Length: 184
Image (tube, rainbow, N blue to C red; front, top):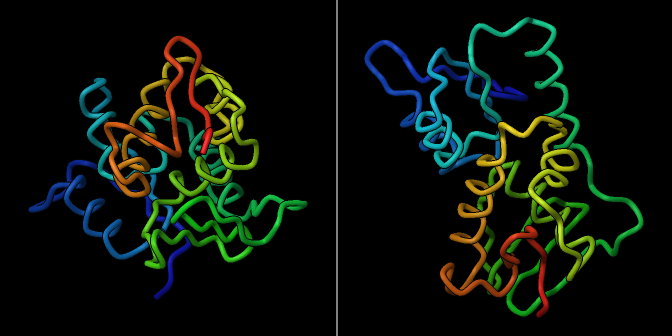
């Protein structure tokens, strides 16, 4: 059994969807979309920080759900043509073809959204991207309600790739403007 994507509700009988998401994320880069009736900001942030790549609040039209599933799967297939296959930044190695990242030679388990964000930012080192630009280019969302999606993903990514997430070397914040990769 090898699913392409996990569509997960927060409210499961006898289990918590956030716990399931964390367990899956520990061992897999399988794309995860939360589809749930719980739509307050707190639940959205918790779901995204647990490792979900997207969060859809019910009720949602089937066409919207299908489009967002296709978008997540499409982003997983985007390996960024025209770039060197392997890029090295300090102790961080990014394999754009194999879609793998290592830190000091050890493979990192990144969620699909984290990997896409890292690939996008590292494709243009030192270029600043606003949250809205990242939503449009990495998540393919065009509305402002998902700005926390970017912040949650950046925090998760930093916790995995940075020597010190409080003083980031790779994914940096430019207050009032957005995020960039580097300077290194």
